[in-house]
Amino acid sequence: MESIIAYLSAVHVFLVKHMLLNGLVILIVTIILARILYLLTGSIAGTIERRYGVQVHPSVLKIVKSSVWQTVMLVGLAGTIRHFLKFSSLAFLLSDVVKSVVILIWTVMLGQLVWIYCQDRSAKSAGERHALQLIRNISIGVICVNCVILILLVWSVEITPLLASAGIAGLAFALAAKDTLANFFGGLSLFLDRPFKPGDYVVIGSGERGEVIEIGLRSTRILTRDDIMVAIPNSLMANSKIINESAPHPRFRVRIKVGVAYGSDVDEVQAILIRVAQEEKLVAGKPVPIARFRAFGDSALEFELLCWANRPADRGLVTHELNCSIYKEFCKAGIEIPVPQRDVYIHNAHE
Figure: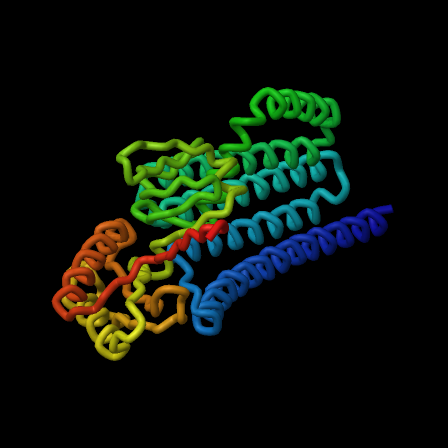
């Protein structure tokens, strides 16, 4: 009997020693693996920068590496604990706790990445700053909601009724505020697509033309040439044809059509048109002005002067100055600007 007890005692000591040894091996492997993944994350970031030219923010790299390290260490610690506790209820409880902590770690990491992204983006207008803040808050809210849902799933909590209630509430809200939501998402599309920016001169499909003053979350404000502020809902802006006269270059092309009498010296006419454009201060030096002989009209030789105003806002003034100068120079040179004429003959049928 004593020999059996001694044998069982020796077996127990052997198993305990090997259990401790196996647990120690699991912990060491976990630390090594965590260190390898920590270094590998930095190496991947460096490869992305060299190959694709994408600069990884130092704070982003630090947050991701820290989250990877913590996750691997927690998973290894959970594996070590389950090795000792086997399949007891306490082991499953600790496993669920570790899963919940890992979810929280990655939730915090995603929230920090969103915050850094929104802080780094350059917002030139108040509308863009408000849009960034709103995107940041909505993104963090969605991340937190998903975190709660995942934790509830880990702990086997029934979430179907919660999802159904949330869906009904969301549908009711969307129907009640569909116009506001349409303008909001229209503003987001304008902010992300950037077809224009404050200071640009645009022509809307409905006919409005003016300078963009501000791009808000609900509407875009345009100052017309009559100094009238027009607020256009973003839902209309997002679905309208928009001509940006300030892009890709801030200058604007001006076309001046003029007709001269038949018999005029075409070379002289062309030289006068180019000289007038070159002497006008509001006309851009590059591209250089050009004059083209377009057609033989019914009453005149039709020319067109092509030049560029420095700003779209100067189009009307440039046209005015060029017309005045062209008329004066033609008068000095004796070049006639004809007008359509008709000769009417009255025939007496009794003669």
